Image (tube, rainbow, N blue to C red; front, side):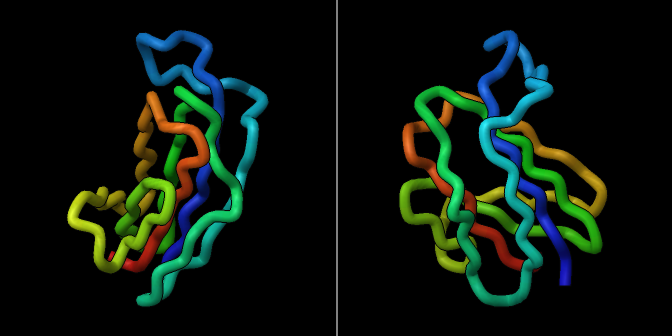
Length: 98
């Protein structure tokens, strides 16, 4: 069982992954083998920081993401943070153990 923290934020500088000190939403998911989706959603062109701990996490992003079946996904190693920007409005994050 791993965990992933999802932080949606508006970047300070759209040319870099500089994170805002005041994220719009923060949610933590304890991952299992089953798909779990955030209740928080992004705004248009927001960024997200995905931090995994306790093991690697497989994540996908979209309006109805499923980390177990989506063909586009991200593997986040234990102790790492992945920054993604330019999200579409109402994007959610799904996660499972990798």
